[in-house]
Amino acid sequence: GVYGLSVVTAVTAQNTKGVQSSLSMHRKIIDAQLKSVFDDFDIKAAKTGMLAGAGAIELIARYMKKRKNIKLVVDPVIYSKNSYTMLNKQGIGSLKKLLLKQTYLLTPNIPEAEILTGMSIDSLDDLETSALMLFELGAKNVLVKGGHLKHSIGLPLGTDVLFDGKRFYLFNTNYISTGNTHGIGCTLSAAITANLALGYNLISSIDKAKAYVVKSLKRTQKIGKGFNPVEQ
Image 1 (cartoon, rainbow, N blue to C red):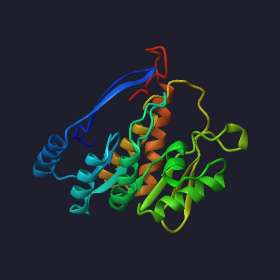
Image 2: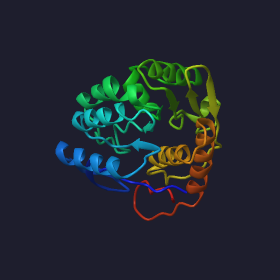
Image 3: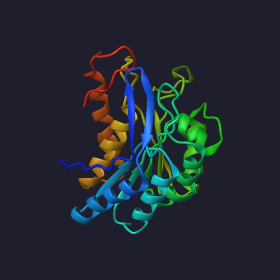
Image 4: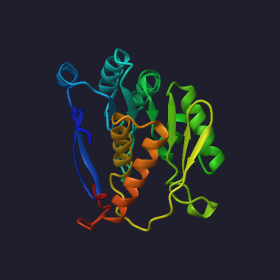
């Protein structure tokens, strides 16, 4: 297995109904946390989730620029399920300009990919085009998650597209009828990161992570009044 370490970049008030409020950590304490982790541990892989602002992104990009051996997975959290803004325009700009160049794998969902590329995504071809555009912004590999595509276009819900700079790969997952999807993207990117840390190649890491998420979705429980979290 793997041992997870954390750097807190923001604190949120949220429940199954959505995110109600958030507070970004001061740049100084984010810097101190990063230093504590990197000074003591041999990090194989890392992932980012909610970064809240340009300050945190600039810090992380600076740290990762000096640590090319660490595989960085970036889950570009921009909005919550209830449309609460998690990353403002300045932060999005810093992510595109600074962090993508240090990114081993970028894992946007369709709304996030649309914001980062400025294009509408309505088909498999669009998924591939957006992955290529994000690759050209600097990410070494791009996995665009297709779960937000309408099931009516003929793709299994959960068709994700990976572009590694040479070719496209499709990862298909059968539709699972559940409203308990809170945290599904974060769980997937965390599982991919764990698999990379264990030494699996990128394709195997994604395959294993998706299988894990499918099992998690099948074990979910209704604990609140909104989108309940996936079982982990």
